[in-house]
Image (cartoon, rainbow, N blue to C red; front, side, top):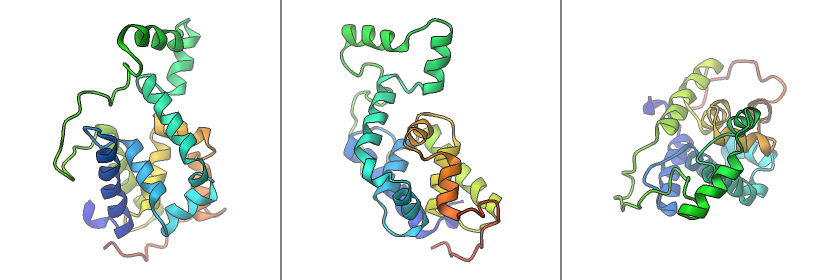
Length: 195
């Protein structure tokens, strides 16, 4: 599959590893993939990210990710569903943090291990995004996987990254429209080369 990745997509994956290293995370997550895409310049994904105003709201995105991690990775839909049956996730988080300290439910906060550069494992969610980027590309008729396919895969996978993106106006439909215009149902042109 990786032989189909364009230079930009490969750079995004390497950038995600670098994001995980800077954060001291033991593994590469979907969040790291998105943050790496936010740092890229040129290419379709960078254009869409800029058009949707995500570059200008990076600190807001990071704050939303921190809040999602604080909730133990529960999505807003999870939180609302639990509220529907009388469970107040905010109250639970507060009680746990009173006892165990701030960020106690943060799934990625485990003991920090020092990894050799580039050798952090990808979480199942991040691997799923990479696999789904192939499906996105094939669905568009593209014979390559570009960073735009990674961005679309991030918006299509239910979870905290898609939730945070949607909160910031970057739904799957909005991203697809920013990438491909109003003719977003048409197959891709397939002319960019993997490299």
